[in-house]
Length: 67
Image (tube, rainbow, N blue to C red; front, side, top):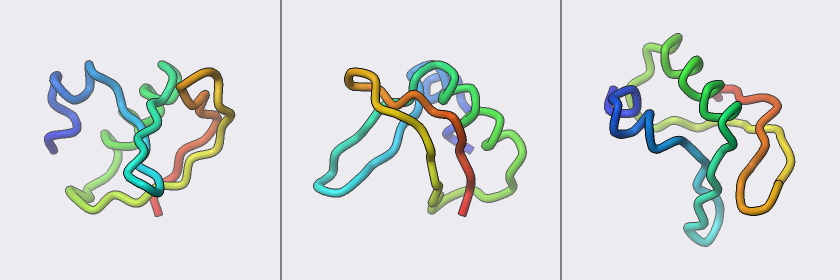
């Protein structure tokens, strides 16, 4: 559960999309990711669906789901 350790959690979350591009979540999205991680037993190979809008270089997350 490395993703829940302070080093990961404090740095924030995001998604990796095609061409190895990483898009960071806004703070609300980070909190949604923390909540998702706290309520799952899955430990690796996370595949998620994220709904939101781009604002600058961050994704303003409205919804996040584990697939």
